[in-house]
Amino acid sequence: MTAGTPEHTDTKSIGEDVTSSELLTIHSARALAGRRVVFAGHGLPTLATSLAQRTVAPEIEIVYESGVTGARPPDLPRTISDSVLVPGAASVIPMTHLFNYVLQGQRIDVGFLGAAQVDRYGSLNSTLIGDDWEHPDSRLPGSGGAIEAMAGAAEIFLVMRRHTPRTFVETLDFVTSPSPHRAAQSEVGTMPAGAGVTHVITDLGIMTRFAQDEELTLTAVHPGVDPAEVVRQTGWDLQVATDLEATHAPTPEELAVLRDDLDPTRIYLR
Image (cartoon, helix red, strand yellow):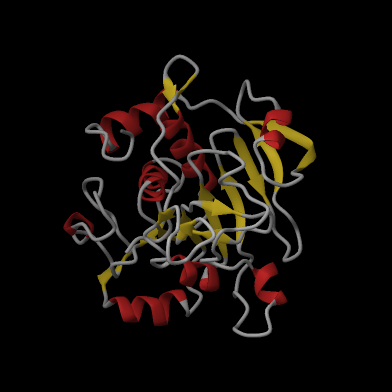
């Protein structure tokens, strides 16, 4: 199982030299500055947390769904259960212990996930696309640890490879991981312990939200991106911050660590 599922693996070029995968990974890593314990989902979240550990957050403790905690792998893991995660880790515990005592015990600062769809309040779909459960347009890997991360982490960071009306939707095709806003509207179940999705990094910019009833707001765009285009590519009436910022381009140093040290064989940057 995987903790959330990015929509697909687009590698379009941003500017002359930087691909969208590199842009997303670097901005995702930067967002982890000052965070301590991170639950890393499969794909770009794994790559981003590894990059953060080598750049802006050297003391970060990475936790994986497979039961590895405090991971400091010598090489980039190919999956969240790769044996390379074990050397140097603080511990390797059964998955039941990880879910019961680490995630439900509210010991995670950031759950870093991907998803197929997200709505304005940060509920996630990583289960299926289409309105027919028996015959969906696409059946996805499912929750993995995403619902537990949503329920127990202090906040959720989300990385989305493509910002389109099909990925940022008014109504999810399936609610895999309900946001605090959606959970509060339900008559059953328990409330997530944390703030839910607070940061969303996409190929167009960055969206943020913090309060239970607060919607995702566009707070930064990547260089050359028109904010109006981000609004057009969102399936709801996206709010734009009055103090909208432009993100800083990846530095040569960040790109060198990412390309030459972390992922020279393009495991995730393919």
